Amino acid sequence: MRKISVSSIKEAFDNLPSGICFFDSAGMLVLINKKMTELAFALTGRDLQYSDDMDILLSFPLAADRINENTCLLRDGEVRQFSHERIRAENGRLYDRYIAVDITEIYYKNKQLEEQTMRQARAVADLERMNADCAAAAREEEVLFLKSLIHNEAGACILAARNYLESGGKGDKAALVEMLSLTSDLLLGASDSVRSQGAVSDLTEAVRAAGAELVFDFSEGTDRFDPDSLPRLVIDTVREAVTNAIRHAGADRINVRLSREDVRVKAVVTNTGKLPDGEITEGSGLSSIRGRVERAGGVLHIESRPEFRLTVIIDEGGLSRK
Image 1: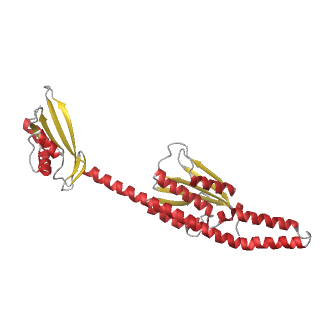
Image 2: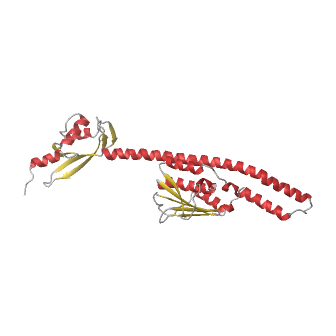
Image 3: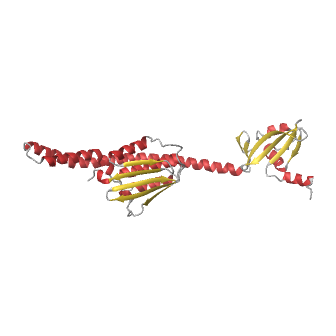
């Protein structure tokens, strides 16, 4: 069996990518490899001789940047992390061991990850602002829409009521009651049936800006249709689910499966993000959406296992619209 020579061990020690050195209990340097010698000269401008020299080295006087107490950025862009440990040899003697590990690749990948996280956070904030702007624009659109409807329908209802009263109650009472009922339904629920052309396209672009993807597809047996033809209530529900998926689950893809049968619309939202830790607690956004859906006679169902799934079902016939 071939024996390994001392010179071979020393050569292998010198060629290690990490810098290593040992000091005895008196503080004298007893062993150092080539990489630690290079690092000592790069960081202090001189060679190591005593353990006190390590205190100077670890202050990183010639480094490009001190990242933390034990880590520095060298002028050539390399990043080194130093560690110190007191060890006992087989002969019982104590030695101080210092190791300088190359963490350059890890450091720069972490920097990239931090920058990406910051960009995503800014994109999410932009998405939230866009949601707020869309909501404000939607409210303004709905107000104008309702004003027009109220002008036509409520005005006609008032005129019919006046004619009925002036006739001494001899008019068509059933028709008047039906008109009053329709007007009441209009005031309570018309806004959720309003369409917003381009709302889905705007939401898709906002999701893309946040570093994610929003994909619409259709259930088997369902004829394809333009998602922009969906009632605003359905689109707002999808928007809330998308915002939560990016903000809380870190999703990079959100899927929306649509189906329509006569006047019944169904949207199922899933995502590729992490699963909730437990049961989902609805915040103000989801609670508000649930209230609007239920007032419209629809159903909102949320599951957290085996995957997150939000299902909204709306009967368009229950949404007042003209």
